Image (cartoon, rainbow over all chains, first blue to last red; front, side, top):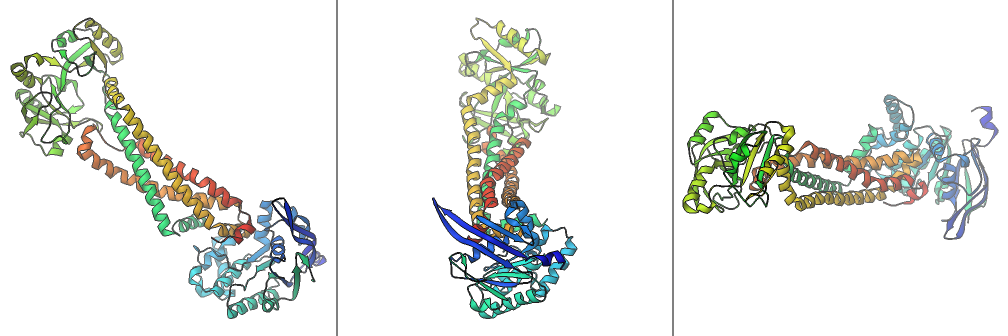
Length: 231
Length: 386
């Protein structure tokens, strides 16, 4: 980590506003959110349904655009990036973990993990090496040829985690990563996330309803009716 | 490579849907190719017409005849090399369904004017020497299993009675497109019988086939020939062999146009089917396309996935459809229906049209789903349940 990186938080959210237009009515979703997330942090975004936590996660991940305010990631205001630049930025900075895994059903575990690497300049051999290493990290070296429908929910989520970290992104965004899992699998996934945070220094932002899952995080941030309650 | 792998795997994801869409595509391409072959078969005769041959007929209509003595007067017109005669016989061999064209011709010189028919000299001589002799095309002989020396009875319709013919020759076509389904016999054989039974109908000719010295002078010679019979009992109309044959097609032009129109309607229908399939497929996969975009893949990549899948589906369907068109056309050519056409063969142009239609179907069917998939907002797509 260099001096410049230490000078500012990894995520700087300033007076962020997001609203949707329904008919001629404007529906506010996030109101004047100001939040900093430090490098190496692991935060849990919590709140009831409709509180705006997933919307905030989407904005940080660069898959949605705010209505107002600024959102700096590593010093770069991503709200000002074009769609194309934002896609490139996501490819190199964000790792996604979804509630329902969102794996490609026609690709096996190896191919699913390899997918984000196709956007890099790595050779086929380098990609293979990196995919094998990553699948080994999540304990699925023996399931590389398996298709998603041949894997349990927990295993699928581990493939999704491998896909999220294979490009070595700065931030991991997790939307209810344990929401579709049984207790044991959920616990395994949370352990894995904790390990990625503590051992590999990944900054993790996780949306969850589950208080037990939130305990895995270093910090909890509560949202209610689009406003930050604490943080 | 990865891209094509993904496309290929996606095609056969919903196996039943893919199979049914492919089946529809195969049938459409096959039907299109077949109907185009039918249209082509109508014109096949005219494409094989000689540039130096002309046909002289009664100016009133083809059904009206001309006196046989016209032959000598035609021969005297400047620029004419040879003249022969041909009469439509229109008989029935065993059953009405056994249709093939039969002509009463001048046995002395008819084959001299048709170098497109390859007939061994010995067989030609045997034909010329036998008053009941007949020469048949190879395909016709094969269809009915006729051999040299066989006697073939034909029931006359225009010329009453049962006529017995001896197969003295079997000719082949010089070119592949040369028709070899005709049955030729002596005009004299029919004419002499008519002289006995119906003298008023004797010495009449349906058409004169005229060979000119210089093919570039066909129009002038035709004009001079028709002028020769101006104000006579039976005025003549002379035209090039090609124009004569196209005139036949013109009589059935509405049918040909209808066949052509139906062939394109088939393509429009399949376009709607493929577009619907791809729209359904793309809608079901919105969540996957959104995931790809979230991972950093461009909207262009997503559009190309949909586009590629549609095109690959169409290419596979077209390839199978084209492959089946050949045996289908060959089967029809051998059937009694094939006797209506001099040749019934899938042309290179038809195959090119089949490929072009399949590509156009793919492109048009893919446009809407590809645009929709590329434009899907990531947050909306991720919420989508396929």
